[in-house]
Length: 207
Image (cartoon, rainbow, N blue to C red; front, side, top):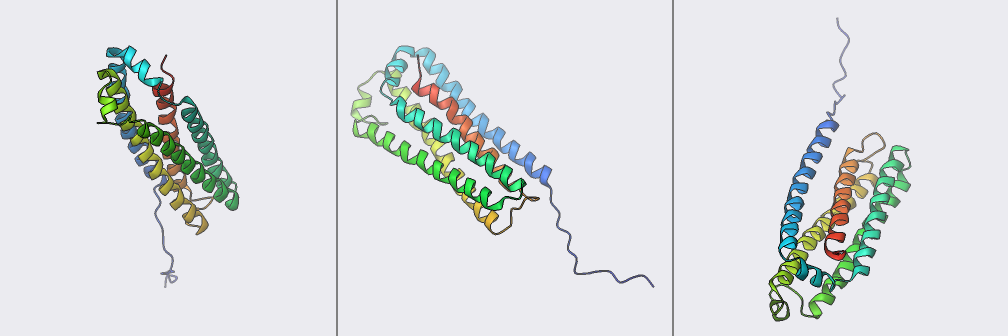
């Protein structure tokens, strides 16, 4: 007679490579979205260069630079959280994930004050003050609110995503040998960072 089989053993199938490929495909669609917007900006800037240059002077470069530093640092802490988990340093990984979330929230607070300052000066889509400006300036601020607003939405999504990964790490759903979800969240966050690196000079450093 053959030996009895262990019916309690459960095989859990993990397709880590498939998950990574799916994430890369999603990130590619995001690049296409923002890439199209960058192309539109470039065309309008070429057609209305002087007015784009004039409008850019009304943006606060300090706000933009501070947000750039915040996102670059948050991208570093996100990478460190993955490295810490791979080295079985769970608590350190959780700390870096929380730091990433806190810096992302700091980015949004900074962006809130920047937008509030612009709106208080009557510079927002459809405002009388903006409509009195040239067509190039109207286009510039229209693209500014659309592109930075869409990026801000991605930051909020990233905050929720990383917060979920932190909970998963605490509950050992994500571990040192099963961290593809955290890696995917990290890839998404790096994309958010890269997009801002292009947005910052595009709007704030027009020369």
